[in-house]
Image (cartoon, rainbow, N blue to C red; front, side, top):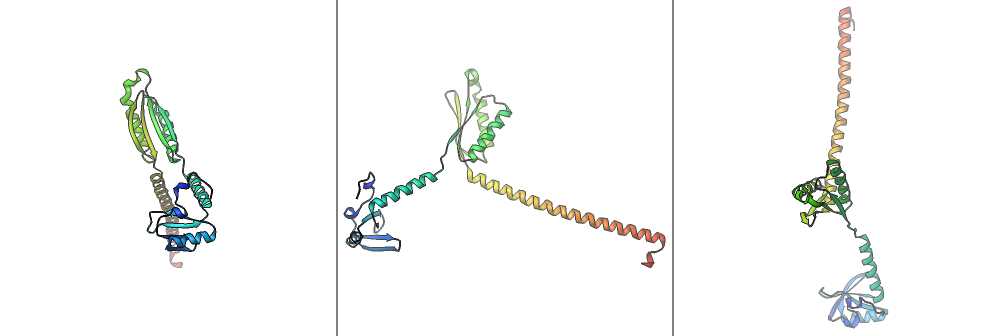
Amino acid sequence: MKNDKNSNQYRVNEQIRAKEVRVVGDEGSTVMTLRQALDMAHQQGVDLVEISPNAQPPVCRIIDYSKFLYQQKKRQKEMKQKQVKVEVKEIRFGPQTDEHDYQFKLKHAQEFLSEGNKVRAYVFFRGRSILFKEQGEVLLLRFANDLEEYGKVEQMPKLEGKKMFLYMAPKKAGVAKQSQQKRDKLAAEAAQKEVEKVEDEERAINNGLLANAKGGADILKKLGLEDEI
């Protein structure tokens, strides 16, 4: 059995202290004495590895320990790769940002949060513009309010030196839910409009036929031919 830096993470073979263990495998699990489990592992030329020491009785596997450690490392690597890497995107404002610039940066923040990233927005006060710190706070609060569908506030506006920061985290579930509700609503409205359109067309056709029938009856009446039909 090869040495490994994680070799002390699990008890193996004679390191296991319980009198009884639950041995798990592809065919299920069996409770047996530690000696029986060790004999089975020895007969198969592999190891008895304690994988859940706090269970009653402790859970073990009969497997080559080096192979077991390799499987654990591979599983951890796969889990790490599946984890979404969250980045922090910065949005910078001035204390007197105009509306066009504000909307431009708001759109970018919406995209960042929708992609699962965090947003750190800040107002930079240059020189005497620090006198407008209240104006900067109002701007950041408006920013947070305009993004409430996309994210949640992690830190309210806070002045640090010449910068006032606002931190927001994504709220994907809420956005997805609301977007789905919006799509359902739009679909229902479109279906209703289609029904109304068809009803309007049928109504127009019926009104036209009725008008034609009435007009024809009037003409026949004037010609004295109504009774002949």
